[in-house]
Length: 129
Image 1 (cartoon, rainbow, N blue to C red):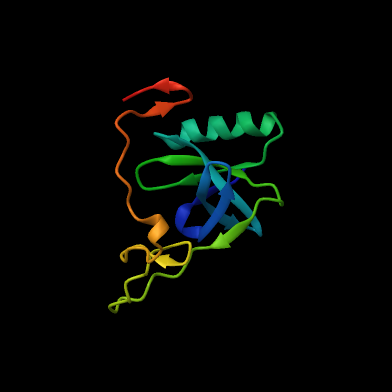
Image 2 (image 1 turned 60 degrees about the vertical axis):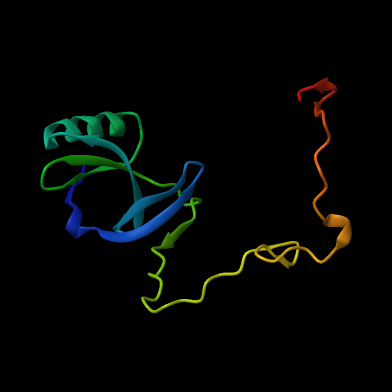
């Protein structure tokens, strides 16, 4: 079992998981993702021991006011470095487009002009309005 201070691990990595991007750390060329947060180090050590007994590779990461159990990621999980921060200058406002037409400008196609709504609306054959 490894008990590690967070500052001793390489941070700034993100893994793409079904739950979205999650923060990961690298320790001894392996990546670990946070699995459980504990109030004290002893609770984290107990949880890590239970993981190890079940065959999982876990480490305990200590912070100033709590400890966490981090589980090793499988090698197939894509990991990336934290993206660089955007430049602090005045970046150009991005243009939003829909099918090649800027959203802020009305379409020049007369067939796409706004049509009045009908008096009654139907959804799947049922009248709703």
